[in-house]
Length: 344
Length: 221
Image (cartoon, each protein chain N blue to C red):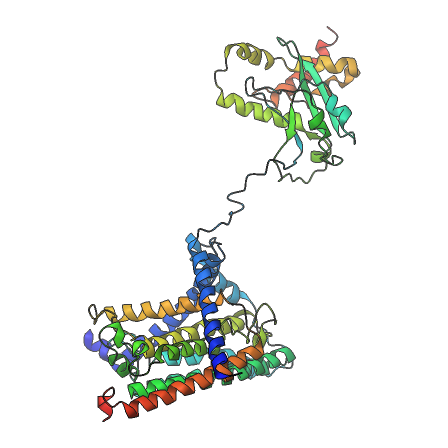
């Protein structure tokens, strides 16, 4: 039985099914968590009619979206119009393949995992742009242009932060990054202030960029559901729109996984003990969902920013500060060799 | 903008974000205040004005109203129609018909103010819906009181001694006083038509049906 599970095709199939199920279940139930969270913050119970405490709501939403006709408006580029939802959903699925959920729970342990995640994460922008472009709708195209300018603006500070982390960890292998943060929680990269006193600031920049990259409030210029019709997805209905919606949550999951791995010690225990075995995924998912709930919390706290202040934040604050942390880390590495014994 | 003010602004902005998140977290910790409407409803406020209703005397289980007719006179839009009858074993007259035309009623409250015996009040009903116009044009307030009276009888299975005599005495022969009061007012032919003012019998449907053919026979005798 164990041999059978270790067969390569079986292993691939199992991980494929598990990742698809994980993304699907998360996308469905994070929508419910989002609505419940919004409800609690506004002192409402949220959806509570479908099943006990509303736990069947995602099912009802799914059936409703599936039952609707997938319309391709006349005059659109039908192929691109249909391909855009697939392209927006595929990258998070791909990224999750390299995310280590536990000590040995990783589908593909790439030694360039970080690079892999970011290269696929960038496809998201292109897919959104394609969706807007293929719709043959002027509003969708304008929104798509806004998405692109936003994503480009936030890709820069995010990658600068990641380069900083890369200098600290010295590896692109995500499992290796996690292994370096073993021990108590002050061994997490977030609290390594002796490496770089601005480490918590780096985390805040990363988290902000993650919000902007996944088009989450207060940076949800792509959809802006209360102001624009639905931004780049104006012409999409039924499951076409549903896939865009699910992809947003899948991207949040990936972003939070990455933040957990890079800053919060991944599957490492925060208290030294209780690590290894099944505790790995428990710690990992616990940290990840804490971040996801922070994302939801932020969405229902802050109003949407204006577009120019969104770009101002990126170009005038985040990019200079992340450049500063990058330089500071470089200087620390050069000037304080005792912090980085491995490099000397 | 100097570097110092830039840092200061960024720091202040970040602090205000944290304040905002603390506020929403505190709100989220409080209990929800939604009233799940179809399952639960809010009690109507004291000043809510529904259609008028007759008040049940909690001591006797009958209407307080003695059909004096002051409310009819007070009504500026002639929406009320009241009739009274003297029940057997009772000294005073009591209401036997109280019909409200809710289509013309403006809920001004003159009737409630005019009532000398505090026998009418605003009901707290706001879900009054019907597909039949007559349910509003001829709103039978007395029938509603009788339904309430039935409820009262259920909760008071053995009423105190004095009303105990009156209640069984009233139930078998309510048709006759109604017929008797209507006979001076209208022609004897109308007497069977007086049955819509349903008496508070336990089986209302067969009883008037049996009484209505009997009524014309009783008249000649």
